[in-house]
Image (cartoon, rainbow, N blue to C red; front, side, top):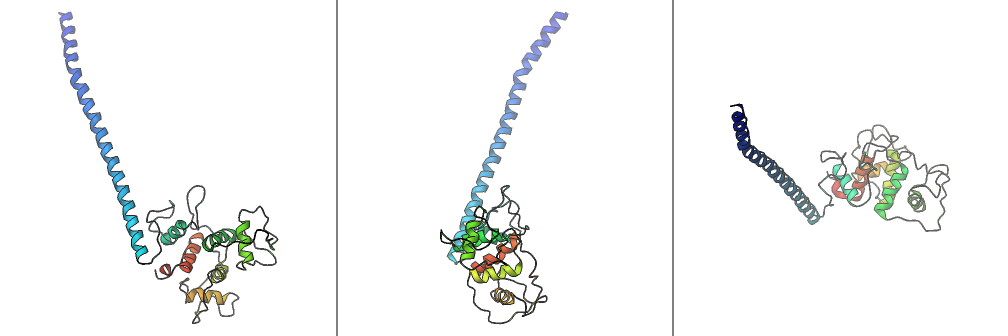
Length: 249
């Protein structure tokens, strides 16, 4: 009787196994199918985003506006960032780049050397191969030697007491002078006022010019000339100097 029970139990178990295996196979197949559908949808969505981005780019070009990618180039500069379009625009033109980790770090202070790299890239500035820099603090093995030499040779960055101070942060007043010289901005048609500087300020003329051109929106407010310029701020100012589109935003 015990033997019969064991045999019967074995038969029952054996009889149930194929159904259990079938259920497991169907479940696995269902999971794989679902994952494949999700992957396909994500791929289609990515393609749609790229098509939309291209259409928007084509529309801007038709209207004579600067083109730039709608998809963020840097993970730390999303579409809601106030300087998103300007950073995208300069990145697309090869004027700016990110750090080794891929980020742009827009809040970092921009150095005078980094500024030199951006301006020479935008304006295709060079110095003669045999040009020897006058600045005493820039060696030939400096990472931005060629760019700093180009700015010095073209009279855009003169420095102080024979030094260009490449590692120093670019002050906002210096930024104004650089942009006026680099983009040959015309004289201001009227005098703008600022709460923290007067017409006697050393760089007032250049600051007044970028205010007249709509490159800075600080007219009637504090300009903060001695504050250093961030990477995002310089991207804003430079884009406005290059393209009318960014001035009217």
